[in-house]
Amino acid sequence: MNVQHKAAALAFATSVGIFAAGGAFADNETSNRNACKGLPTHEQLKTALVNAVKLETSGLDMEEWATIVSRDGIVCAVAFSGADRQSQWPGSRVISAQKANTANSFSLPSPAQSGDQPQGLALATANLYSGAQPGGFLYGLQFSNPVDPDVAYRGEPERYGQANDPMVGRRIGGVNVFGGGLALYSEEHKVVGALGASGDTSCADHMIAWRIRNTLKLDHLHAVKGVSGDPERPDNIVFDIANGQSASGYGHPKCPNLGDAASLPAVRP
Image (tube, rainbow, N blue to C red; front, top):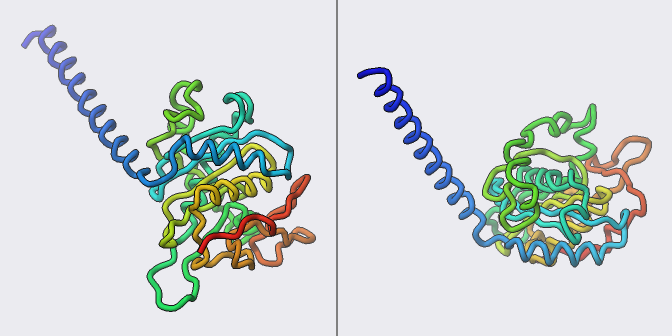
């Protein structure tokens, strides 16, 4: 085989390899998208987000990003509340996905049980703040499972926040330890994924995420433990930091124009 024939053969083999890899990636992406079946669509997330932003009176009155991930950490939907993708902090798109991944990663379902004793554990990203500080029992958590930059920043920015956002169908990763991320619980008290909201103070983000989850009817947490001390709102944000210490170990700093977390809707049975 002469040099030209060898070059042609190599080019053909390379093209076949690329085609095969591309096909495998496409099949994997299709499988990932299938993991999102039964979760809210982009349109449903956007509608719930817009309404939650309108209802929330705390914070800085900013527009928001929101992301939903599946139980396997696959991004299923990304949306924004403003007129266009310039109406929110651009950095909050990835933060919302990071929050969703965190809440999904560190929340547990309620297993089959007899009686009414709550089991499992729901942790909002707001509940992780104090433990992740230096000397805390979760210190270092925020440095684990980093965001995948190839997923976060791939594709055309014009698609950000649309139904075909480039993050959709891929695992984003990331750990966030301030308010705005909540696990999603089905009627069977199973974790089916999580939601992240970002774009305002971290306290307002938590309140908005809470309202979104309530609208989407994925807040069946009455059979699940939380750390808030409120069985009606088990994974609610906790404001118990005094002199730099959280009484419960799960406290979150207070934010400007702080809202009343105790007035948020109670979770579903």
